[in-house]
Length: 419
Ligand SMILES: Cc1ncc(COP(=O)(O)O)c(C=O)c1O
Image (spheres, helix red, strand yellow):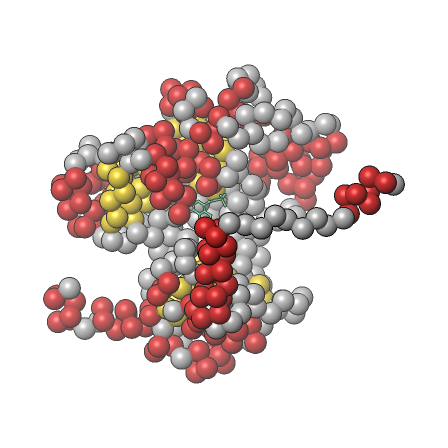
């Protein structure tokens, strides 16, 4: 009893020095008070069961699927936490970790694969192990932050490439020489597709390593969810596929598809693989069950595609500037953060909840509200979403959005040729 009361007592923390307090103060006094108009931008209304929440990356709506829950429960019941240690020590080829890695690798058509603790850890570890100091890494401006962090921590040179601009990519490669090209297959902020065929051509012609992050296409794209690289037949030209499994796989892990020789090297080279513990057996059992559901329940991909096509068509007809993307992620790019906060509040007023993406997830002038569609949306959910957007349209002031202004600039031929 005495121990409990000691634990419950809140002890005042020691004062922080200025170099920390000045940063915390700047966040509260500038970002929250001025840039966000006095309210934390990520705190809107709390949704109720009557609202339509389009925030989860569970694109195929498999959370709670009985086969997945049962696999996790069975693994836990049979002592399934596994060993608390780095994957590095797990050298038994028959260990659950390696069996699930082999399953995923077979699906994307590569020799083997590596499971990491998260997509973030997979990307940081991969870039650390392929790009050393002074190696140019050609990275799409909208590529995920974990890839940028991999470049920073490896000491390599980040060479930014304009989003999906093949001509700019080739110019940069010609200027800086062979290096690593890094792209997302489907971009997480606006749902745009990378022109993978053209990127693979440039990588092959100029002797570059090609890394494709398939976080938003693994499971959702391809006949059996094998992703875009495999479904486009590009496995022989893409050196590494990476993915977060916290999207369509509805798990907590990251994946890298690679060769066996590389996998052995990675385990002794990538810092997140060496110095952070591996996945637990019940998580692996859940992943393997998710994989089977994803491969066999193709109707989920068909439904996701139907919903995406319909919602994108209707929103475009209503004049929403969403033409940067084509896939299941839809960006309402209002621009400055305070405007995005207003867009969020208005839509929440109509019962639709998205996620605010602001700096550092976007630039401060291109913040956006992200809506993620999923296969579990019923026809009436889809109708509610379109109706809400239609009713909110005038309040949302679409012409003021940065996406509208950019689209207008693109449609002016003289300006386009000057740029
Ligand atoms: C493209 C992309 N790569 C990597 C990640 C990181 O994945 P995780 O959440 O598994 O760390 C994300 C998640 O936001 C992502 O969108």
